Image 1 (tube, one colour):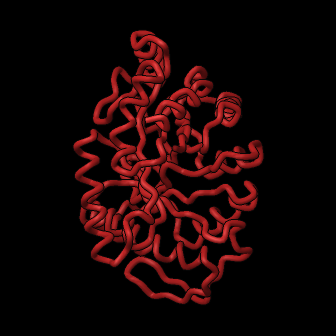
Image 2 (cartoon, rainbow, N blue to C red):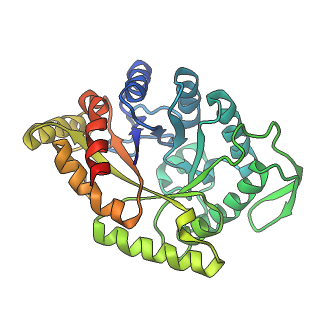
Length: 308
């Protein structure tokens, strides 16, 4: 079972983000993840927020074992050629620990603020994502690409040097049954979702259908799931710590996602149904200034989950 720390990049400063990343590696986490946003997405949008790719590059240089990736990159921000070069450079800086996380993008406010094309609809952005991910796979695998598509054009494009990894993994985030999961089945190595057990079970079944449509074994897609998580021996102490993190980020509550709060045994019990569905990678959503006890104690949760 793998555990990743998804450190929110808003409402923080660099020393705090740096130290949390180092604590996560020392605490036995398998991966470090952060957002790809230009304005804060939780609470007031004017809060400070750091750019994602440069944060990953710094983490890559500071760490030795953890994987590093965006959860997830905004496809609208960059053309696939640039994204491929960023991922490849990150793979070299990290010595082969990069994961290319990408999604269709959803936060219109930041696109308006910085004059970035948001497209005309969700469907269009997801079609653009589908085309982009297919091109990313070809570039990262060493193809010389000439291409004329609906959204992108390439002429004799190459991505050199090649990534350190023979197959740099692409993770697609999102749960749209028609388009996003189609893209996962066609081109992605990994998929991220979040939701209740019932919601997630439905999405997994849909992903299996999309894989069948393209002749792919769904077991070849690494499934990842993300939740807010705070570890304390008493649930009331975890709730108090989580409430403090929300206030720091200008929030009064968090809705729409299961929140795992309490002792390691309770968190492991909440994770177990997802593991039974085939999820072997859990990402903990961690608001700044990041909960050190959770960073330090993830090994207790891992041991209980793996023990069943």
